[in-house]
Image (tube, rainbow, N blue to C red; front, side):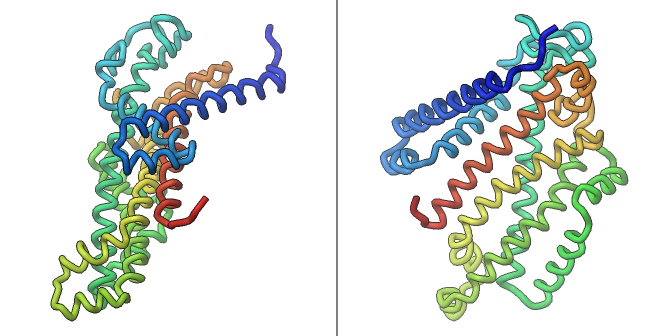
Length: 311
């Protein structure tokens, strides 16, 4: 029986993985710089390796999500063998608790989990940003009404609130999107309102008011361009939180329902294998963690560029 892996060997494995990640990030950055227009190429050449690695990971996830039916060797819901088969040349990552191919399920999980998270983030961001900007520009009773409503919603723990609403409304994908979008839009509202409140007191906003510019012009032409950097960064961070919320709800059984492939539910369904030292249940968990880290790398780079700070 094999003993535990020596510490020095584990350190070597970690160093090799780190070196591979650095090499891939550097090569991908060079490739992007060659293919991009001149202005964008200069920006990409100065991008840190962490941002390049994040962009590479996001690109791989997008390809997996878009072309899952072409890449996957089997169907998303197809039972292709026995339960918990080991990794081999046919089933690259083995099979799950029902005999479905794990590699196939991971690919379709990218399409389902990431796609739903992106839609939910877009909905939450649109609602929260629009209402936050309106509250800051209009002020008065509208600002008070929206702000106090958001205060009440944010006072309730997000996960408990989501579990309560999904238990009442049902566990369909549409309900999950609406519930998570409602909860996360409150955070976007707070940021958008805070950023806009610092802008509406500027002289050029007062000059636009004196020119007789309407609400539509003030928001789209005067405030939004100056608030774009923190809002874009918030979109990336909000995507991470939404992505993790969807995975957590699916793990608890209130997210996407079987037989739809979803990384959170895949961890739950195959958790038994951890008892026997099998890392298969950690693959969807690792996919969740990797995408979260990659998005944060890119967001950090965008915030650094927007701040105007030098290395």
